[in-house]
Image 1 (cartoon, rainbow, N blue to C red):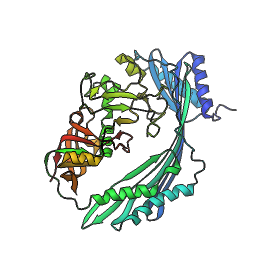
Image 2: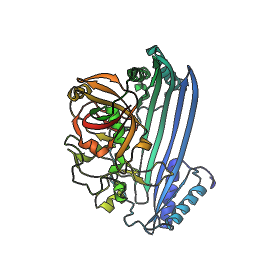
Image 3: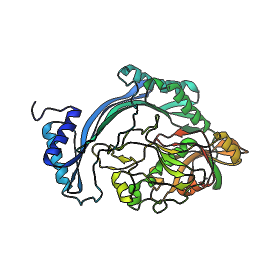
Image 4: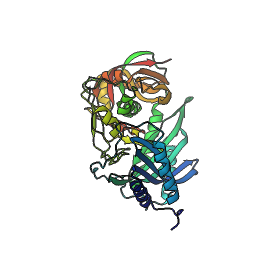
Length: 451
């Protein structure tokens, strides 16, 4: 073996930890590897097929009380040694972090996020899913004129965290994902909606069901009329509520609180929502998009209640933000990849369900707005203030029944005001494409900008 021989994944971690111990440096190694396949279909043909793989190790050295970061995708001894030296040298360039610490955290929960794997799934079967998505949408209704988006993707990955204090753990996960967006047309109106399915078992994918859902949602928007302007009571449909929840989940980050970027700073113990609002983050959900047994520091995952009956009970923390706040870590240390630094992020962000269906909520609403989607969240939502002004889709409701779809309009308000205005919470929970989970809710009012 030469200095340039590529080490195996586990060998690279062991080599780095041994090197750190020899030099008397505390070191954390965050390692990831994985493969992804993406298949897009258009016009009955495969329009794009992409297979990618990546692996690398991120180093976080604790030297003289300061963090130093480095990473490498080259797993030779020479490259790993250079990355180690860089991490230590980088630590000398930054100010010490008073609460910086590495530890061998408690054992994480046992979780199966890999299922049966993808080794028995042929490329032909993956291609068939993408093609079937498009075909099923076209066959479902004569008003489907084309399907601009029909995609299948999957990925297998392994994440490992180890440190010089004795921590060494890893987990594997798998996802299989499909989505499509059919374009429908009638009487001069064109409408398109997306639908998706994410699973950890390839065999659970149902392209026909997803295609029918997307087509149904798009057809429902035909015949849209101008939206009124004003302040109206509303029902926010589950997937839209989950999207809003995901957009503003960052305000519960202990790091944002520490940096003065959260409107919830200094509100711990105060009422920030109606009695019906309970919010938690649960990385241990079996079907969650962001489930994992431990965080980027190896800290074990567990459900965390953030809002109970409208009262703010806590924030999300990694070990450092927790120490600064005088509490324990909640297991929410995050890294965007082995290239990134440690921050704080939610996992499966959940608004707890209540009772009743969406139709029950519409009956209670009587007359008002059914909000089904919002767009432009990156530009129109401010997670520091909670303010939002977003392009929206929805329906006008009369006497508790959906009367007609509305042309594109805007909704505006403040996320915390929205939580305070919740008057009913349904039981129809659904996950957004960003991983947050919510039921439909009825709120007392929302500002609508129509034509």
